[in-house]
Length: 239
Image (cartoon, rainbow, N blue to C red; front, side, top):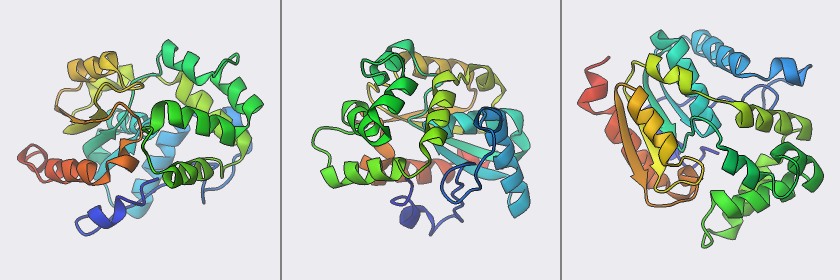
């Protein structure tokens, strides 16, 4: 989902995009409950950074990827020079869990009963993309999302639903940029208050949209903010 960012950032930085275990080109998993967890995902990122011998790094994560970034920066501060969070919640609110259940017993039941593609499309037009978004972009997003094995996607959704990054926030020492939708439906005012209160070196910037997928719909605005942040004195003086 980062392909639009690459031409704008790769002229300045070496970019590594990791496929999490079980999806994309990464290897499959044997036991979904055991093998797909915050701890394992963070461990995979640590091993990747060490394998490439590139740490410390700038880490940028969107939504659940941002939650992993919060955990990584908290637990392995020596590996992270600066952290960028894009539309990243601290947790999924009960109200949002109910909306994503789409009238079913839970988000996970909705995904199973509606089918992955139908569920992604319905929730995308509800919270991820504005009504005037190019329908081809929404089609592409739905198809990309649904490429994974359904049971793996459901397991990652369960992980998102249960995640709570609040305990990681006070331990983050690196400069941190949070790029948030204005009046975000998932990253609401309570979420922003938590990161403001608990992350020490934090800058928050807003994109004028209440919809979640700002990294796909406001590419230039987001990447400009990232470049300004990573070349700012608050980051460079920390290196």
